[in-house]
Amino acid sequence: MPIRRPVHELIARYRLNDSLREVFVEGSIDKFFYKTFLLANGVRQPLIYEIQSVEVPPELVLSLGFEDNNRDRVITLAYLLESQMPHLKQSTEIADTDFRRLVADVPNLSSLLLTDYSCLEMYCMDEICLDKILGAHAPGFTRSAAEVIAEAKSAFSKAFAIREAHQRLGLGLRRLSTVEFLRVTDEALLFDDEAYIGRYLSMNDRAGEIEAFRRTVRADLGDHCDWRHVAHKDDVMEMLAFYFRARGGVSPELRDASRLHRLVLCSAEIRSLNAEQTLSRLLERVLS
Image (tube, rainbow, N blue to C red; front, side, top):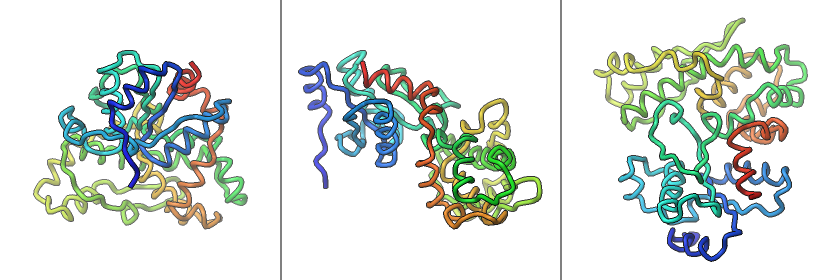
C-alpha cells in the first residue's frame, strides 16, 4: 500500500518552496487526462498526484458536510491547505462538478477547480470528438455525432435527474442498470424513467416511497443548458453502448460501455480543451 503524505508535510514543503506547482486529482483516469492536457500545452513534467497519495482524515471530510469519496477528499484537501496558506499557488486541486452546479455546497477556494461540465469525460463528448470516434469505428454509420447526441441527450438528463434526487435525499441506495429500461426508435433513444424508479426503489426495499421519490425528481434539469452539465459518465456510456448495439453498423468497441469509455477519453481535442474555462485556469496556475 503506498505511503500517504500528511497534509502538514505538504504545507511545510510549500512554505519552503514557492516555485512548486502540484496538482491533486480524484484517481488514475483523472491523472492521465490532466497530464495529457498539460503535456500537450508545453508543461514538461507536470506533477500530478491522485488523492489517495495524501492522508485526508475521513472524519474531517464528513465534518465539512461532504461524503468520504475521492471527489470530496480532493475538495477537503483544498480546504485544509488554504486554511493554513490563503491564496495558495503551489497546489491546485481539481474535481468533478457532478451535482454541484445545482447546489452551493463547495467552499470558494482559489486553489480548487471544478470541471466545466459534470465530469471530465464530458470534455470528450462534444460533436468533434464523437465524430472522430464514429469515423474510426463506424465508418458506415448513417447518423452524425450531432444526430446521435440529439437522439440520446433526453435519456441522459432523465437518468441524471434520478441520480440528483438520490444524492439530495441522501438515500444511499444500490444502483440499478438502465439497460432494461431503454429502447431505440427511428427518432430517439428512450428511457422509461417511471418504470426505472419503481424498480430502483423496490429492489432497495423502498417500494412505499416510490411516489414521494418521483415527486422529488427535477424534470427540468436538462432545460436551457448544455446537456453535458446534466449527464453522468456511467449512464452516458451504458446508454450509448445500448444505442449503438441497437442501431448496428458499429465496431465492438462502441457496443461495450467500458471500451467506449476508453475511446472517449482518448478522443479529446486539445484546441477544444484549451477553450474551456477550468482547464485554462489549471494551465495558468501550473505555469505561473
